Amino acid sequence: MHYSVSRVSWEFAAPLLKTVRERVFICEHRIPKRVEFDRNDRQAIHMLICDDNSQEPVATGRILPSGEIGRIAVIKEHRRQNLDELILRGLLKAARDLSLNAVYIHSPLEAVDYFIKNGFKPIGGVFMEAGLPKQQMNCPIDQIIGKRCYLSH
Image (cartoon, rainbow, N blue to C red; front, side):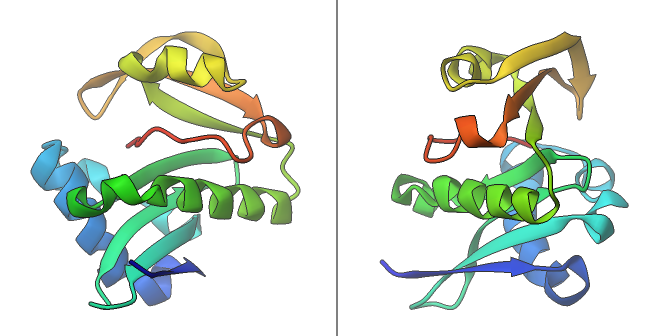
């Protein structure tokens, strides 16, 4: 399979980004729509991957100016293609363009050990986000380049 990876703005790509996030987070994970789409989407840098054959959007993620990585979503049928890595690489490049030295993610609790093994450190206590327990994990950008990434809301 061949894919196109693009850095996009919410203003121009919202329908495509919404398609992926609705399928993954709203349909699969039962995240309420009012929680999934927030005002941060307009200020975020988004990555979008489309299948070259079907031209359908299949993966997305975003980074906020604060360095928060999130909303990484890959359509179920494409999860074995390592598209999450492409999204993460694009978001890390965006972080560099924003002159950020570190990024953070709100990790599902089952992924905390994964992130620790990949250079992230837990910050603060467990908190609830979108009805799920999460742990904030921070990491300098240069420590996570090329690492596999865990799908995260």
